[in-house]
Length: 304
Ligand SMILES: Nc1ncnc2c1ncn2[C@@H]1O[C@H](COP(=O)(O)OP(=O)(O)OP(=O)(O)O)[C@@H](O)[C@H]1O
Ligand SMILES: [Mg+2]
Image (cartoon, rainbow, N blue to C red; front, side):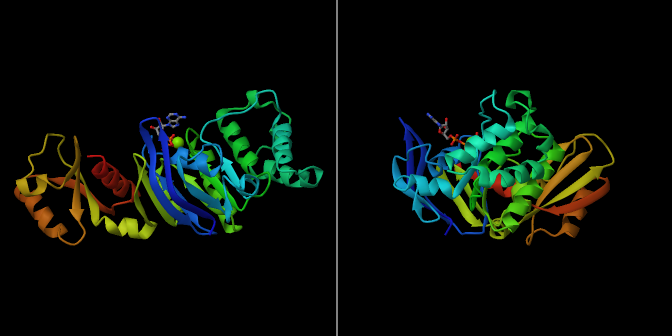
C-alpha cells in the first residue's frame, strides 16, 4: 500500500474542507484525485505532505504515519505543489542541491540531479536564477525539486495548469515514464482528458466529500451515454420534438449535440424523428461519453 487515508477531517473554522475521507492507493498505481475548485484536493495533499494538520484521521505513506513518523513519510514522498513558490535568488541547480540537502543527500546525488535537469529540459538553465525563468520552466523546476530524493510516491498537484500544449504533452510523457519505472503517481488535474488518458484509479472529491472512488473504466461504464453530434444544414434555431428535447446536450447555430442512452436509444429512431421534424444535417458522428461527462454529472448532482 503506497498511501492509506483513514477518516480524514479538516475544518477551517466552520468550513468543512474535508469530511471523513478514506481510501487507499496501491503501490505502483497511477491515481487521479479529481474535483472542482475548492473540493479539498490540495488540502488533502497538504496533509499527506505534513504541511497541513488534519483535524482528525490518519494518513500513512508507504506505511509511515505522516504525523508521527514525519521524517520517514517525507523521505518516501515527492510533492509537486500547485502554487509556484520559490526563492528568486537561487539558480536552478542551487535550488535542487538545497532541496536534496533537506533529505540528507550530498555530492553522491549530483549525478541524479544532472539527469533530472536533462530529462526535464532544464540543462541549459541550470545556472539561471529562478526569477529569470518562464512560468513553464518554473513548473519544471518544481517537478525536479519533488524528485531529488527519488521518492517512490510522487504527488502532482495540477502540474499542467497554465502550461502550453507542448510542455503539457512532455509532462504527460514524463509522468508516464516515472510510473513505468515503478513510482506510484497521484495526479490532480482539471484536464479530464489527461486523467482519462493516464489514470487507472480515480477518486472524485466534491465540497470536501468523497463522491466517487473506482477504476477509470468502472466510472466510464457507470455513465451509460454517448453523444451524437450533428452538423446542421441551416444555422436557424431548431424545433426539437418533445421526445428529443430531453436528450439535448447543446445547441449552437449549425451544431446540435444530443445525449443518447447507450442501450435505450436507437440511433435509427432518433434520425427518423429528426427527419420528421424537418431537421436536416450534413454530417454526424457519435462518441462515447468521456470522463468529463462523468465528472460533470457526478459533481453537479452532488451539489444540489
Ligand atoms: N489555510 C486555509 N484557511 C482557510 N480555508 C482554507 C485554507 N486552505 C484551504 N481552504 C479552503 O478549503 C477548501 C478546499 O481548498 P483546496 O485548496 O483544498 O481545494 P482544491 O480542491 O485544491 O481546489 P483547486 O482545484 O481550486 O485547487 C476551500 O474552500 C478553501 O477556501
Ligand atoms: Mg488545489
